[in-house]
Image 1 (spheres, rainbow, N blue to C red):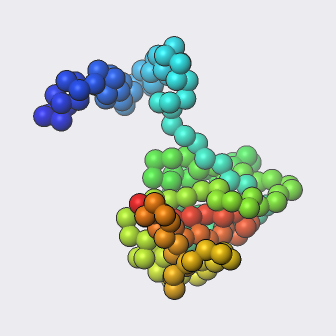
Image 2 (cartoon, rainbow, N blue to C red):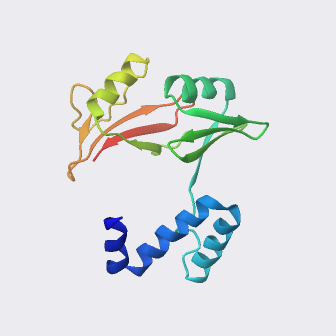
Length: 166
C-alpha cells in the first residue's frame, strides 16, 4: 500500500498504469480499452504484450529442445506453430520450408546467476558458442563493457540464443 501512495504522488501515469493493469486482469474488455487508450496517446504498442517468433525446419526437434532442454512450458501446437510460455512472454516456434539462421541473437534470457545457468545448460548437453575477438572466460561467458555478462548457444536450427546477467 505505501508504494501505491508514492506512485500516485510521483506520477499520475504510473498510477494510471497500475490501475489499468489491475482492471485488465479482471476483464478482457478492459484490456481492449487499455489498448485503445494507449493508441490515442500515441503509444500504440507501449503497453501491449510482446509475442516472440522463432523459425524452425523441424518442429519435433524444436519442441524437444525448447520444452525438454530449456524447460519452457508448451501451451499449444497446431499446424502454424508451437506456442510456449517464456516467463509470461508468448514464444511461437513456426515451421518454415526454407531457413537461413540469422548471424545475431534472436532470443535472450535475463538470468540471476549466469555461471549456474551455463553449467545447467552444459549439463543438458548444450555447447556454448565462442566468438573470435571476444574475450570469453573458461565457461564461454563474455564480460561486456557495461558490466553485463553474456553467453551464447544455438538451438537445433542454428538460431543464436543468449543468456545475460545484468
